[in-house]
Length: 424
Image (cartoon, rainbow, N blue to C red; front, top):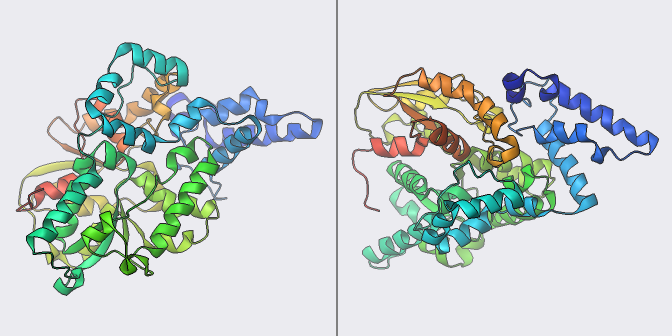
């Protein structure tokens, strides 16, 4: 059920209502009207969260998130890209700039006149907090760590598989790279504890999800083609080559698994690149795994692959909408209960209401809060002492801003349960 319909009870806010509006408006073309100028169509599309919650429930398999993106794209082709769409399509560029001057950037994000200007210029609500930029980017941390590891073993370029490891590529998404590097660090610790050799995709671009959600499909397709070509040829090798150089090893075809920490990035690779008809997207989709699912599958096959500390802990899980649209999330509770002493509960929650930039917009802030209310109620009902897992960056931001909860990514929970953590 559409979360905006659940929040408002208005038919136009439901999937069926939106589909009927789109069908009706498109019929206007027969009379020479421009359907893209319809206020009714604009309301139907702009209030859609693109959460994909309707896709697995629709008997006709209608992808309303894709339909919305294509209609927005049609409007962009006719009228051009406005400033808001240009900026919201490139959080990776903003992250690169912000992390170059993190103290200045973070101070600016809290400076009231700057926030007021941002609200007037592109609609970002001055009442909303914005993600802070990290003092050290995740990829820079990884690069220094990789070089240090090679120096420690006397520049011996020992192939990972010589130690019985398997290679994985960790996709460091925009928010892990620039805003939440601690999540990437936790993921590396967990994957290495499982005996896996971790590399990053050097030269990768943003997955394109922000641009896709804005209807900026040219940018999304451009990023997608770059990433698919990169990953199709990238051979995970030594950490030094993966982060700082190239060579014959980096040009061989690879079936190396690609691990995603952010569900909306994962769904871009698993579904939307294929919808955009990007060559090679199918083979990359087959290599793409959600972090939690990948780790759980390993531990299902080999329970002794990693050891975790015993601790009494109650854990509740809010699953991301995009993850639920692709996989059955019940495995997440089983994964948590593989940690000795933990009791897990997968909450029956819908969309968090943030949905990327949607909840950040002043025009959508109240609707975002309405959508979030049932989720917040269910989490608060679990009591103040539970650990809350939310693997989507938007979900964590919404929870942190609207409640007293400090939500964690699943990677953080697993890393904290390891008996010993390598120094970072």
